[in-house]
Image (cartoon, rainbow, N blue to C red):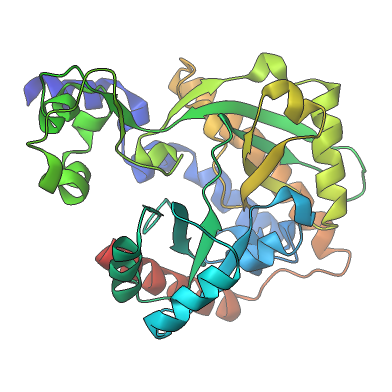
Length: 346
């Protein structure tokens, strides 16, 4: 326990979000003062609710991307009779396994891989909100690309490019799942989550060389491991994301989560699918897992906040006003209520 505590204390990447961001929060407050708007970021992506800071639905995001770049997706109301759910899924051509997740979700909460009808039934009975059924994309390479573009320009900046590896353990034929979790450098710091998700499997000995995925969500807060691909950022990559940004007309600031056959194919604009577009609430997650000192991470975050402020200010002055305080307050309260509900059922 002492060793684990010391590891968390000395590795800033393991600190709580609020602790990491508190020292630079005055800069965010300064942007609020300069723009005279608490929700100064809302025009950053004006066709997404709240600019994509939080609480936006996936449908509004998918509808603004080229159809061939997004996975097959259908939307299911949580109170639909299960027989009708099965009919809708069959009519859309889905076969097990596939992915389910809330239409309005965050941080990988209630993200599940569904292998059979029994799992689907349990998920449908449990989830309290509308959710999506989506193809399980098994392309071998998962990446995130952070991109921003000033609205007055046609070319933007790819500021971050990372490879993502899902949280997993590899069996040795001797240790139980619980023992493997306790030995894993990341999973051991997520004891409560691992117990919640996998306690019923903890006594299982994982066969040698078998990969057991502890989470299918490629998020830092779900324990995914990132590898910085900054050296791969070039004119080809910029061209792909300039085209995507201009296709959707008003995607100016955010992060694309993508699966592809290879980095080379992504740069050539082929063989990739966009799993998510995260708007102005997206963290520049390329600050993690690249041996950045905390000061360097702050410098990167502040660079992105400056771009966010400038994009939002321009759009505010050109037909997309800041949300007023009351509208934003109502939205964020509803979003927080929704988030707490999802956490309760995760």
